[in-house]
Image (cartoon, rainbow, N blue to C red):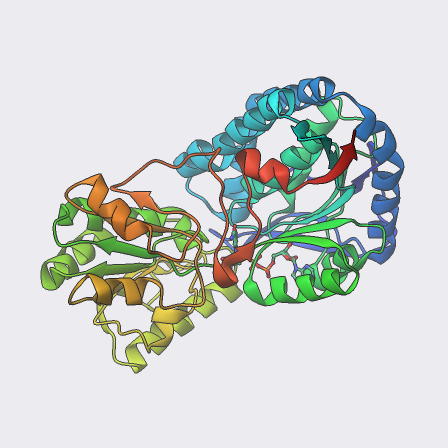
Length: 462
Ligand code: NAD
């Protein structure tokens, strides 16, 4: 697979100062497909200096011109969707259809939305005798995960650039090739040198260096809650702004009046997409008409054949983690009705689509994020019980409510402690704010709310 052997800093691919390399592995066949530089602290420092030097000119660029550059980036990403999809399939293992429809195409839509927002957003407002200017925060350190490799990058870089910020990106070590393709698109779009910089490297070195760099003004992190807590502590100690998109354990609440089959089938599809590696996945199905739901869920999961509709997990460590949770579920008394830990294929980091019934709130699999193709079915007696279950984890990222009519579902959704709720199968909206309540995060991504994260206000009084 094609890979750059340098880092993209100050508008050019340059050799890393650090000498190590990261091997990129295809999780479907466990073969090494490329190597990329394992950037170190000095590389991060060089990238941050480039971003700082580029900031005064970029912040002074009129929003309409920033919008034009973002439109060009939107077009460049659109031109590259096939190459992006192939790369995501190679380094993440996503089935080709999913890679093209979601991993490659969604970021194009998101980039387009920020091109439009840059042109239309009110960067000034009047409040009484004040004019309030909304100004870019400065140099952004963006740290992204591997599960939606390009989407997570675009959801940070596009709004930051629209706001007038400059960026240093440290992508996940499992999916650096997609990040390199993004840097190529940035370059081709004519983004001025230093406005966007890419340092590949591992979290404990390059990630730490970026989060702790004294000349970074805002750290935007997406990843696990454990690392997010550490990044937030580092950033907080330096009084930097911080945005966190973390884990989830979202509830799919099927109210008694709902179309049970539609709700359960959509719920299984939601979790199995991307092999369960979706932070907003509805991994707990809360249901009243219980035994019927268990049968529906087991039958639906059986349709997701590993190697066809379901890809592998990203690496061996994740597969072992997920298997560990399945063993734990069995040990704690949950009833396995589909899947299990037996490898479904001889090679590749695959886990069979797995459904647990009789999951109770005290079980580990009811509380912790598994990040694999595992669904938990939980029984509730009445709506109050369902609400207590839905809100009964440390997370609050997403969720779903199904009922005979939208009004009944909305009444329930209002009482949920979570950042997004899909009503009766509502579609994903790339402009709606996305982010968590409780330990699922701080701040919002996407749309005008996502743009606002990269702005700070200055009030002028007249
Ligand atoms: P992770 O936290 O291990 O890694 C995320 C990023 O942080 C990677 O780029 C990694 O290199 C970097 N990193 C690791 N250690 C670091 C450190 N000490 N300092 C700075 N950076 C460091 O998470 P992951 O395994 O890549 O992703 C899976 C997790 O991410 C899941 O828990 C999932 O829920 C969460 N996630 C959340 C969202 C969201 O939007 N809320 C989206 C995707 C993934």
